[in-house]
Image (cartoon, rainbow, N blue to C red; front, side, top):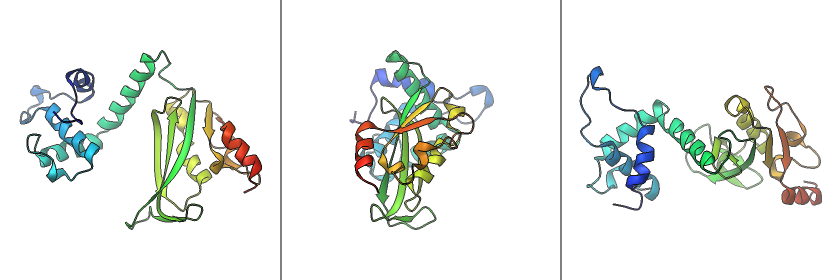
Length: 216
């Protein structure tokens, strides 16, 4: 057992989230238990090590990596994440569908090339920018990654476009001062972000005070 390995109780919750092999459809049986494969994937995720450097008492790296790619392609990871998030909200006595969310962004330095690389003049950083939309418990609702040269308000519109299709009860989003200013309220003043059902957006109280003091 490693710190990244799942306990019996945790695996009992995770196991139903992954597709089961149907012997009637043929194909080779699984050579390695799914739990062992998941433990290897989580070991890589937790430690950041290379696939080939994982201890040999876990599943072989090529089998785990192939399984990881297949499950990513068929949407298993996304569906499993959403189901776990809903289970947490229900356990907290909340509706699985959130009615409020928090939006923020972060610029990450990167030396790799490609179209998703840009210069963030505000942070003076070359790399990528990621937006995270989370519920009030901090659980992820949606993520978006693009070049750091894309401004916060433009990136936020990408995040919130069509969001009520997935979360129909979402009606309020808190954002920080990076998404608006006194000269151009942009995101916080418009209802054109969500044509399927306008979402009210407002700056968090502390950040709104900073926005009022800083005309930039």
